Length: 196
Image 1 (cartoon, helix red, strand yellow):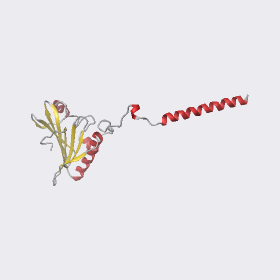
Image 2 (tube, rainbow, N blue to C red):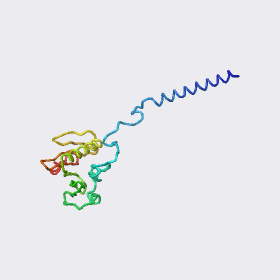
Image 3 (spheres, rainbow, N blue to C red):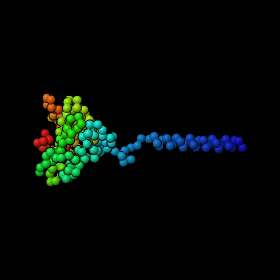
C-alpha cells in the first residue's frame, strides 16, 4: 500500500515539474514583433510622457501641441483664447504676445496665419546670460529630440522634422551682451522673414 502511494506521489511530482518546465519555456521565449503586431517605438509619437518642469514649464509647453497649447492648423481664434496677455502685435498676417518671466527674462511668441489657420509659430527668447541660453538650449534640444527624433544641424540651427510635415528649428541668436534663442515651427520647406 505504501508503494502505491509512493508511485502516485512520484507521478504527481513528475507531472508538476513538467508543467512548470513547459510554462517557463513559453514565457521565456522572445516575442516576435511581427507576430504580436507591435513595432519599434516611434519617437515622434511614442515619446516618454515625463512631466514638463523647470524652464520648459515656464515656456508653457504642453505634450499635445506645438507650442503653448497651439498647433499648426489650429484656428487663429483659438490663440486669443489660450494666450492670456494683451497682444503687442495684431494684424492681418499674425498676432504676437510677450510673456515675462520672474528672472527678468521674456519671450515673444508670434502666431502667423493663413486662411484663418495658424501657419507658423516663431518664438524669441530674451535671456540674461550665456548660462541661461545654454540651459534653455539643452532642455529644448532634449525635449524636441525626445518628441520628434534625431536632430539635424544645418546653417547654425538645430532642426527636427515632425510626423505631420512640420519642421522645428532652434538657433542661438546671441550677439555680444544680448543673449537669446529663436524657435520656429513651420511646415517643411516654408520660411518666413521672421523665422530666419
